[in-house]
Amino acid sequence: MGNLANKTVLITGATSGIGLASSKALAKMGAELYLIGRNSKKGEKIIKEIKSETGNQSIYLIVGDLSSLTEVVKIAETFLSYNKPLHILLNNAGVFNTIRKLTIDGYEEMFAVNYLSHFLLTNLLLERIKSTDSARIVNVASGAHMLVKKMNFEDLNFNNGFKSLKVYSHSKLANILFTYELTNKLKESSVTVNSVDPGEVGTNLGSQNGLFGKIISPLMKLFLKSPEKGAKTSIYICASCEIKGVTGENFRNCKVKELKPWATNAETAKKLWDISERLINSSIKTPYNNVYKT
Image 1 (cartoon, rainbow, N blue to C red):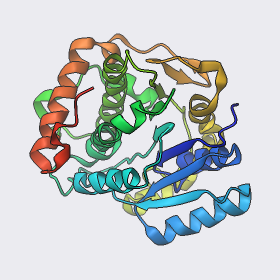
Image 2 (image 1 turned 90 degrees about the horizontal axis):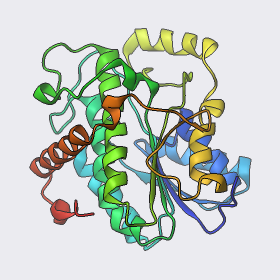
Image 3 (image 1 turned 90 degrees about the vertical axis):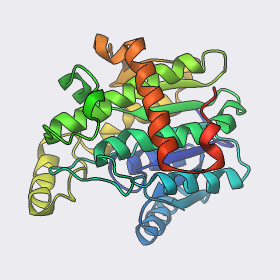
């Protein structure tokens, strides 16, 4: 693994599960970390924990809820106000719901949090990323993308036919298509963009789903690999010298994992990008509305 001293890293979903394990590992390598979390009290506790365990004191919290596109804008504004380079953006946050929920912007929550918020955040930070030499964008996806063979463009909110695993898988397919299209848009730059399949990991994903989540989540941890093991590929893509310059790939177990054809369909990826722009520009009114020029 590389030495990340003097490198700046921004991580979403950094206060639990794979995100927390990734944060600790990257902190040990000397990175200056900016962690995004919804809860300031929990976030500050996690930062103290990371500082204590790693000895790295350059760990900072940006409070923001990815289920709100307006808050995503504020997260980006906050980071940009520090005038720091951005060497690594780890889009890690995710949610799994057993019942259909809508965000404050009116979007199905798994689609919004797992994909659309990361699409927006990445684009808001893209000029800063492009101005940083050999920067990396890492999107945490899932092998679950194989369970759906197309984007549900006719009903992205799943007003009809909501099934938890199907909708979750759909959001992860969107992550991969986003990676594919962004790679094409950045091919003339030094920025690399890759997706990660962490495998079957026991995390707190889904634990917010009432009594069912509180019972199932701990049970799943008994049979699935730990967040520390699940984070290994994310850490590898963020920090390894071996893959410098490698872009547009999907990794599992620190090796390139071939994607299904529908996950690398250029027409679908372009359509998703264009629709995502329209959704965001209809939801937020900011100076960033013209940011999607790469």
